[in-house]
Image (cartoon, rainbow, N blue to C red):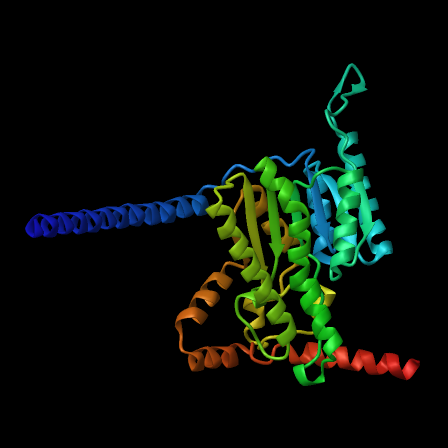
Amino acid sequence: MCSYSLVSDILITTRASMNIVAEFFFVTLKVLWAFVLAGVKWLVRPKEKSVAGQVCLITGAGSGLGRLFAKEFARQRAVLVLWDINSQGNEETAEMVRQIYREMDSTLPTEDGVAEVPPFQPQVYTYVCDVGKRESVYLTAEKVRREVGDVDVLINNAGVVSGHHLLECPDELIERTMMVNCHAHFWTTKAFLPKMLEMNHGHIVTVASSLGLFSTAGVEDYCASKFGAVGFHESLSHELKATEKDGIKMTLVCPYLVDTDMFRGCRIRKEIEPFLPPLKSEYCVKQAMRAILTDQAMICTPRLMYMVNFMKSILPFEAVVCMYRFLGADKCMYPFIAQRKQAMNNNEAKN
């Protein structure tokens, strides 16, 4: 009896070992196949999906990248919902969107001299919302559901930067940076994800930064907030995969420094800068749009950022420091911070 039990245990253990070996082999094949598919997508541009008629909500739409995202989605005939704390800037973006709608309607084909009526007339809606405040997000989200409908595409774009060294930065500004750049993603996602889950349809875009993948000196609060946004995005992506909600897509956008007012004055080593200049905001958004419309999981612009992130992960810290110093990336934010400080001093002198 004892011998029979021992043999049975050995057979069960052997079968379990064979199963895990077989499963490991199968997983290895799937990983290799994922590499093949990724390579094909780099060589052959995937077909872009249509978002015409879908409700696209963009935070921080009153200026910068948010305004450019709004214009690009308008060209895709999406229904735009624009959020910003700046009402005037938001309305200016909305007017640009309406102009794009009018231009597209004027170029529609005609039949017997009569313009063809498009099957859907997109609209744009504006809301003043402070995404750093949870209550503001939830109240505004309820207004959107009531007045516009359910959101199909959520672009978490709003962002701020304090522009101070850590020990000179007021606590309130640190909290503000974390709330707008990171915490807001929680509130907007909690507001609109439930309906996406119910319909198994939607797309959430996190506009982060290369400084959410690797850091530099002088912008501790900004880097922390962007690292948090990246971590939130990746964890949510895994959660959606775990629940097998394949109809909800996620795209993480991590651009290098963009030539906007946000980091004006930031400079790397002058000999290196011609090879790695700040990105034009239009180029950055067009690259991001291509990733969104092809359901790409992550887009780093330029592609060199993939390599930088990989090297940062495998090299010793001192080796990374040496590279930073060679590139002038270790103190690239210092001119920007100095400009911010000078501007604040000038404003105080005027007052």
